[in-house]
Figure 1 (cartoon, rainbow, N blue to C red):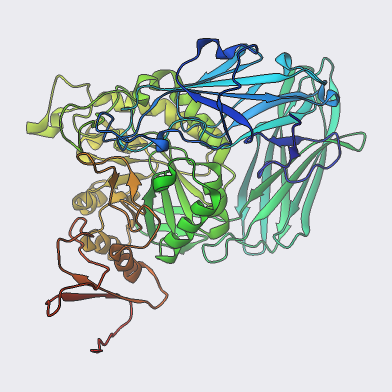
Figure 2: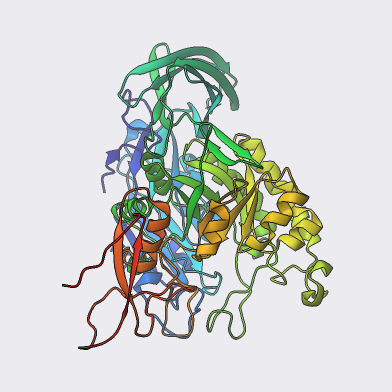
Amino acid sequence: MKVKSLTCLIIFVTAITSSARTCVDFDFDWRFSRGDFPTAVSPAFDDSDWRKVNLPHDWSIEGPYSAEFSSGNGYVPGGIGWYRKHFKLDPTHIDKIIAIEFDGVYNNSSVWINGIFVGQRPYGYSSFQYDLTPYLKFGTDENIIAVRVDHSKFADSRWYTGSGIYRHVRLRITDKLRMGHWATFVTTPEVKEGSAVIQIETTVKNGSDHTQSFTLQSDIISSEGHVVGSLSTPENVDSEAEQTIIQRITISSPQFWLLESPNLYTLKSSMKVDETVIDGTITPFGIRTLQFDPNKGFLLNGKQLKIKGVCLHHDAGCLGAAVPEKVLERRLRLIKKLGANAVRTSHNPPAPELLDFCDRLGLLVKVEAFDEFTPPKNKWVSGWNMGIPSRFGYGEVFAQWSIIDMQDMVRRDRNHPCVFMWSIGNEIDYPNDPFSHPVLNDEYRPEQPSAENLVRYAKPIIEITKKWDRTRPVTAGLASITMSNAVGLAQMLDIVGYNYQEEYYEADHKTYPDRFIFGSENSHRYSAWTVVRDNDYVAGQFLWTGIDYLGEARQWPNKASGSGLLDLCGFKKPIGWFRQSLWSDEPMVYICVSGGRGRMRFRGMRGEEHWNWPENATVTVLCYTNCPEVLLYPS
């Protein structure tokens, strides 16, 4: 097969010269089979009868659904699957550095190239790369990459995960003297109305056997395509070494990244040797200021802004975890149309393209890392909060991998202007699942792990986050603020998220006057919104959830949670219209009916979209509007 050379999403847009960085779309022409094949690592293995697939690919959504599987994961199968790809490389790349990049593989992936093991990654939501250079063949010789995905512990999550290489893959080809992986970090340490200082940190690697001289050229390009700032920095880097170059460029009359006008700049980075460009990357970024005030709440670019957020899982209903970008974009546009201005990635790092869309659409994002520390939480198998749970999950590898996974999440996503918070976890302090503490009184379970462990586990995660980005606050969605206050976990956080604990806002604001308080997960109830609306010190809320999602299901044959403003197909539900009446400034009117069995009922909200009622039936008409007055006329 001849490899087709394409441009790289975000990282690089167009090759500057024939010798500059090249990214190859590696999504196409894979061979796949369910089951375990220990000899599939061998280049001689016969995969001719395997199924041909393109990535992203999720085999769990193909079923079959069965009650024997886990309700938490939507009653879908897991298992083990193998992927293999055959490809050839142009001999002109023989002196290059060639790496493969995976945006996400669920889960426990292991990768071989030409029969040689190059790495493994347990966490199914992390992006990662492997250097393939030492093991590749060129010209007419074929290369074979093999990926084993082990999701045999299918009851390992409280929601639908999918299985397989469900996000994009690419091949990256660079010179030995190059910019590193996720090498560029753009910040705006000084922002004024008339000017802004852009600080650029670029990590450069020299994989050659001698010291090399080069020039790093940084150009800042406006959304209109004009170069508004440039700087060239000559440098030397030793053999087999890396170094970080810091540049500062001042631009005048900056265009701010705003929710209503999400202006983006582009950093074009070029490495030159004797005026020849040997590597180049493209990094979109935005100019905006974030302020988190304990009394005034959240301020974007100096203006107070109530966070009107929704929590989102990563699946798209019948499409599973391999979500087409058009579907993702449509869903985000609908969420913004409702009046939402923020998204919480529940409860894991998102696909990179979600952040790309939020950058362009003007949606803030709270990026979350984990749903558990260690040991793992309960994962319900036979129904939500029913029966005997499993205790598989990320907690099994947390001690070994959490620092690496957190670091990679921050490094990958820190240039996105939409990202305004880093969350180290969701309900990691859930009472007795697994941690406990005497402050829980009658609920205290001394046989459970001590909640003091939360501080011990959180400390290095917070430290690694701040090592790679000190421009955004670190938070967590806390389920038991009483327990977290008692052990000091809440006090470690820059800002504190309260999950369904509105009753503690007022008292904690008085007890901890320097604490920034917001609802990190909240119900759709009107009262959960009014406490935000009516108190400046409560910065906002994130509704559970923005869209219905697979998993966290009740008893078979139900396969999904109906807690969203949109349904599994991405259509607005009555509860979505209700939220739009509270959040949107655009005039709207929507009527529905209260009656029947309450098919659309969720946590007190009830409405039916249809009007197919029996003749002479009496129904209650509900009207959701943000208009001052509405008249209903008989037909």
